[in-house]
Structures are given as C-alpha cells and as structure tokens.
Image (tube, rainbow, N blue to C red):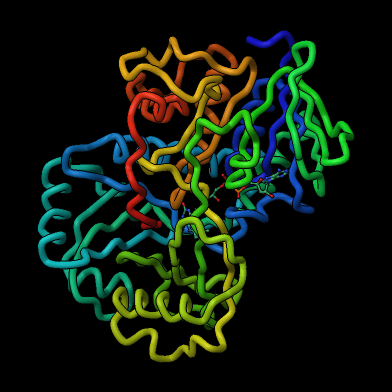
Length: 398
Ligand SMILES: Cc1cc2nc3c(=O)[nH]c(=O)nc-3n(C[C@H](O)[C@H](O)[C@H](O)COP(=O)(O)OP(=O)(O)OC[C@H]3O[C@@H](n4cnc5c(N)ncnc54)[C@H](O)[C@@H]3O)c2cc1C
C-alpha cells in the first residue's frame, strides 16, 4: 500500500475512468489527465460498441476473463444507474452468427458442453436467428440475451461522475514526461510545467503509452479502426446487435454503427471510402442484401486507434522495470517501477474488459482479495511478455 492513497491516472477513456471510479469508491483521491477536452475521446469515442463475452469449447483464458468481465460489467452498469449516473446503453441482446457451417457446429457444441444459463447464452438455429434479427440470415449461432451496445463516452462520463469530489480532472493537458522524485510520480507537460503529482501513477493512455520510456517493455500496438455510420430510422431492423466477423448495431440517435476495420500500425486518422466499402461488405455478410441501400462515397463514420496487445488479453498491473528476464523467472520476481501501473492492451474488447480490470487494479493497490483466479491475474500481468515471445495479433473481432 502506498504512503498516501492518491493516484495520477493518465487517460480518461474506458480504461482510466474505470480504475478512477473503483479507486475513488475505496476512498482514493485521483488526478486524471487527458489531452482531450472531455472523457471518452480516443478509442473510447464511438457512438455504440458491442458488449458481450466470447465463449470457447475448452473454456480458455479469453473465455473465462470475458465471462467474468461481462458479468462484472453488467453489475457495474446497474450500480452506476442506482447511484444516479446512468450509462447510455441497452441490453438489446447480441446475436453472433456462425461464419460457416463448421463454425455453426462448433458453436452448438460449446453450448451443449457448458450448458450455460439461457439468459447468458443460447444456441439459435438459422430460423430463430433470422427472427431475432428481423432479417433473413444464412446460419444460426450464439444468442446472448443480456448483451447489447454501450456508448463508451457515456460510460467514461458516468465513471467520473460516480467518483465525485474524489476525482479531479485535468483535461487539455498533454503528458510529455513522467518523473519519479522523492516517492512521487510527477506528470510534466512539454514545457516542463508540472500538471500533477502523486505516489502512484496509472498509465491508461491507450496508444499514447508507447511514447513513455517507462512503458517500453509493453508491446502495445496501435490498430486503426473505422466505423461506418449508417443513417437509420427509429424502430428499423435490426433492433439487436448482430455480429459475423464484423458487427452492426441497432439505431442510436438516427445512426446505426457498422464496422469495423482493423489495420495495425497505421496512424492515418482520415475517413477512407475503401474502409466504408469494407464495412459494407462485412455488413452484407452479416445481413445479406442489407448494404445495398448505402453509398460508401457519402457515409459518415469515425476513426479510432485501439491499444492492441499481441495475445489479445489486456495488460493490468505493475509496470516492469526491466525489458528482459529469464524465461523461467516467476512473475513475482520481475522488478517493477515503484508505484507505476498500467491498464492497457484493451484492443478490440475494451467494453468487456473495462470494469473488471478497473476493479482488479483497485484490489491490487489496496491489497484486497482479487476478483479473478491467480492464473488469470498472471495472464493479464504486463510483465508476462518478458517471459514469452509476443505472438502476432490476429486482428479485431469486436
Ligand atoms: C473502430 C473501433 C471499434 C471498436 N468497437 C468496439 C466494440 O464494439 N466493443 C468493444 O468492446 N470495444 C470496441 N473497440 C475497442 C475499444 O474502443 C477500446 O478497447 C477502448 O476504447 C480502449 O480504451 P482505453 O481507455 O484503453 O483507450 P482510449 O479510449 O484511447 O483512452 C486513452 C486516452 O488517453 C489520452 N492520452 C493518450 N496519450 C496522452 C498523453 N500523453 N497525455 C494526455 N492524454 C493522453 C487520450 O486522449 C485518450 O482519451 C473499438 C475500437 C475502435 C477503434
């Protein structure tokens, strides 16, 4: 436990605001710094993102952590609403269609093997899937009745509001450097001006983390993504989220989100017609014939940069102070920067990770019982990459 329960958090996206809310709930004071003028303007700035878990036949780590993250996230959304800070979201249900007949068989096998509660996950055949989507589809798949869409900037704003006076915000402030002086981390602007200081600093600045030398051992890669905004009338189909390699949301404020592209190491922030075209191709794969009504030359949209990790799991915990370690070193023996933590690598699934990862780091900082089993805590430890070579990222599937 640090000398004083006071933390700097760099980044006011879903990662930073989730930790801020969890720490504030435990009595911590927080200074949160973001170069944008309000929360949720980076990768967390989309109008609607998909919120659901990702099961697997062998119930692998991704399946276990997304299940825990989804269930924790549902409780977090309910608690924010109970405390008077409702998030803009809707449990419309998420329909995840099989991409081919082989995958459809596997998806059915997952449900048969795990027999999850029907309000968590059900297998639906093609006919039922078409009825749920209110559009003819090619195959069946998974139906998550409790899943839906979340508006990420509203989640960020609600997290900060729930933290109340415990959280002070420093918007329009670009962190250029972090320095450790006399037991404090000092956040400095480019001209050397001090923005804030505290004994604990938490790096939740998305793809911006790569610019900080202390975070050099973390293999975060930017993955450009473009969402297409489709004009939509209220009540039009689909009124649920439908996924099949890409996703399409229900209508929200006259717009339906369809996406998204995933291009690693591309810094271009402009909207691209060819990426709208790619999104419309995905849309037609999800709902055959649906995309014909849209012209890629005239669509609006939004570009963001996902902080992607090589193994598609987040990075949450103390930042390693070395960039190399013997493969057999226990994670607990890897030296860490004192008081420096990361909540990063959310990649294509920030919405399912955010609240659980905020809670995990808050528990670690308070020496409280952890909300995940130890093997899963180790699976998200930012130092894990020192012990194994990073695998190439296979792309996005939000
Ligand atoms: C096109 C697209 C579609 C997506 N769809 C989904 C989806 O359907 N479901 C889902 O779960 N996830 C989805 N994601 C992923 C999800 O949005 C991200 O995982 C999540 O937003 C990452 O949150 P973050 O807080 O880590 O990063 P960010 O939201 O990027 O937050 C980082 C913040 O740090 C600030 N910052 C950075 N550097 C500095 C600095 N030096 N000084 C001050 N401030 C700084 C930035 O301004 C930013 O506000 C999508 C992402 C994209 C791009």
